[in-house]
Length: 185
Figure 1 (tube, rainbow, N blue to C red):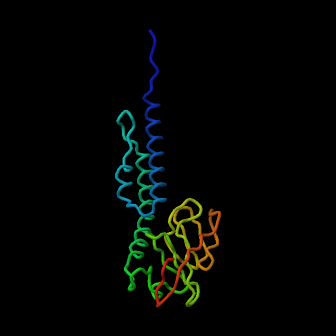
Figure 2: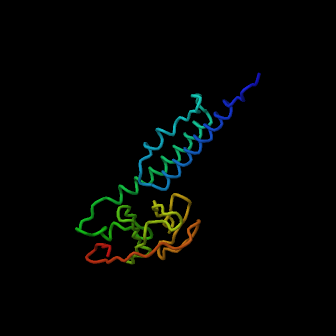
């Protein structure tokens, strides 16, 4: 009499590994697509089941950790997005010059552009697309334009890489400042 090999243990391990891999992939996609909502990625990733129907607690814990990290990235992105979509007073303008803080800047996610004012009255514009993996930058602080995906930072005056894995500076975008407004050319 021959005995069939038991595959329940292998199927469970495969299910756990597949679930953890999918959770990691969902987290990476959510982080790189910063404008998406975290509710779409956290719902399906919150439970992982093996092919035998048994629930995996380690996969669920990984899913929860990934969902919270994704939610914080998406929250920052949605705050930047809502600030970038505020209407400016001049039709066709990205913003008024008063809306661009001195020593900082403003991110316009819809246009994929960052406008900065390194010193009073000096306005610069750069692509908002990180040169490392194509994520949209999400904040400007301490003289740098910051990418949420892998930590790249760019100088607000030049667009040059200050820190992180980005291989190139942010490309300069042509703007025109006229009548107290900033226009993308």
